[in-house]
Length: 165
Ligand code: SF4
Image 1: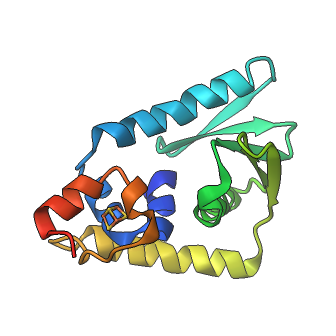
Image 2: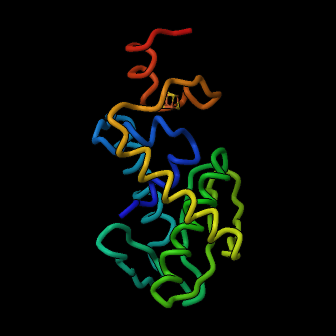
């Protein structure tokens, strides 16, 4: 099953999705994921939460019954964050659980509500097909320099092996 992180990387960079899916993990990527987890625990220590484990792949926090919630450090990747949340909503809906999403951005102190529409469901289904195709490729998608690259955990990996152009 596709994880929420894979869905997010699909939006950020297909090559990153492939590298991550092959288990090529960079130290700082691991730290970033842990940072998010700690951030979440600090932000919601007292709220009553009920966790749903979806197919052993991702854990979702159900707050107030109506929403599932994600905490992000900043809204720099808001499109990818939104898509990841839509994927969670899609997976829950498939299991008969209809929810809305809330993404909290701690740096900007703002919240974004995410509602799954039929059009979003189609976009998720298309993404799932593409993700399966990408992760089964024998080699990574070619390097394409993106504005995000310098902040990416795989930066040195990508640019050391293929050369900075
Ligand atoms: S450094 Fe750039 S091309 Fe390489 S995985 Fe990261 S975002 Fe993708």
